[in-house]
Length: 196
Image (tube, rainbow, N blue to C red; front, side, top):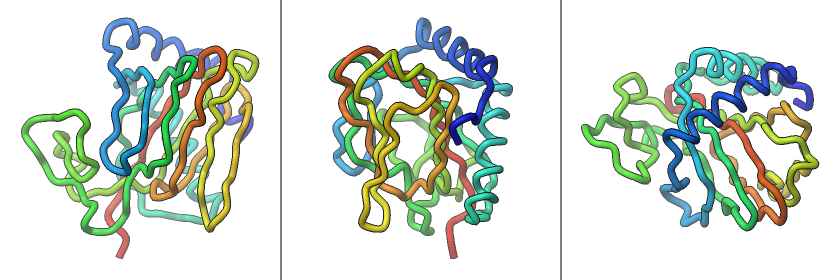
């Protein structure tokens, strides 16, 4: 989705992310897959940002022909990758009943994908992932999103500012190392009941 968001919408998400990054930045971590990850993240609990990204996911769900039963999004993750940062091949979640989230009282880092402190996510699994590019392509080199699907690698180099990519959460993907500059993105996962 090369023109998923207007520059004003993209600026809004970017600015919200930068505010949260100054106050609540943490090192990105990952549970499962043994994926190498180096990045800074902050969580956006902003209704406007969530709504913008929800609309993109709903649209892609229909236009791609997935028509998955989607119930609830997670909070948006604002991510900054600096030079030499990367995120190795990993999946965002599995969609069978064994992956369904169960409630835990205390958050741990990294949180296993089948656990949650949010009672609204209990019994659900991640179904679709969305990433929105918040950096103009000239701001960084490297940082390519690569998806492995059906035995083929699909690459998305130099995505336009405000572009979005939506894909099933079980698809293995990575961000290649940043060789110059900073890459910023907003990521969200949409949950629903396990596949039957």
